[in-house]
Length: 469
Image (cartoon, rainbow, N blue to C red; front, side):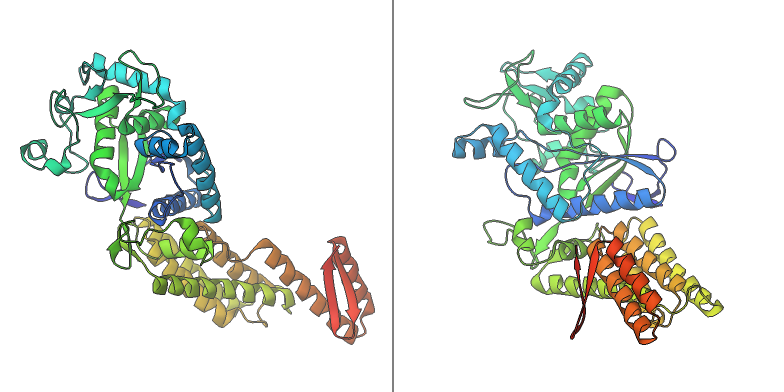
């Protein structure tokens, strides 16, 4: 398995710190509103990374935080006249609802920044003791950027260039900083803001500090993978590296993964342009699975353009897979023979080659676009060979492969209830044929079998109807 590592700017072979186990941290949303479709891209992608790693047999400890204290949260709370915690808890719940709709599995741990304040104070104290941080007169604690010699190694920015004129790259601050590059670890409260006691002032943590502390607490000092959107490379992830490694004296994360931006009709998503969409906006028009399928249809490091036309194409592509699975399931129910013959064994070997292509694509920096292409090849093969006269063993093998590979993508292509309905219809068809053949014993046996499953049959002039008891 190879991963494009932002730190090294190349695809590196993935070797976990602890054999068979993966420690992965992905920056989560700031919860002041409903998540937008730009938020959804890293959520969907890194959920798929986790699913594939688990498919290969790795045990993944996956941590993704909620930033539940922030200027935007405080602003929303003031506007509504409620505590900031009420805003954050509301939108954490809403975020979890959207994640469930998109088949994003809960992380191993979803820490909240406000619940980790003691550990954040400890890291500040350690950094001050080591000379990497200092407290200003008003109680603001700053990280001393020039004290960390490797600053800029992730974003590949030269510290002197940052100082020399690229003002847009500087972390904004006041004159009390020793150096314009220094960034905030702890900030004093403003009137009416929530705060916590600290040795320096009543205040709250800086955003960068939060993630370093939560990663360390739930994954350890060194982790395998740190991920997020490419907009986080600088300054957020660069600052995380600086404060984490300055604290521990060891490397922080071995592999840094960043997904590219999502554009809307070839324009950057922006409220001012009127092209800002929440996940809820899109789910009002499309099945959640279509949005997930669309997000995975491009390589994660490629910019992804959202449009109605591309969403329709995604819907059609997903429908192809679901139809193939439904047809195989139906044919499985009416299959006339049980075991594969030699010709089918050769056909299954071809099907397995598509699964291998899927795995090769995912092993190559999680190329979900090529992985989906491999699923389409398998679907085409299944449509050609998984006919009603195929054996049950062959049909089951094809169906299992399509369902399994789709599940790695987080797609449910054959829902449990649909599966049951198809099985019921197949048994009813078999019972009808048994009655035509005057095999009443088998017909009665099927009726009893369905009754035991909670299915009641009713023979009518129009045919057999059924319902759940």
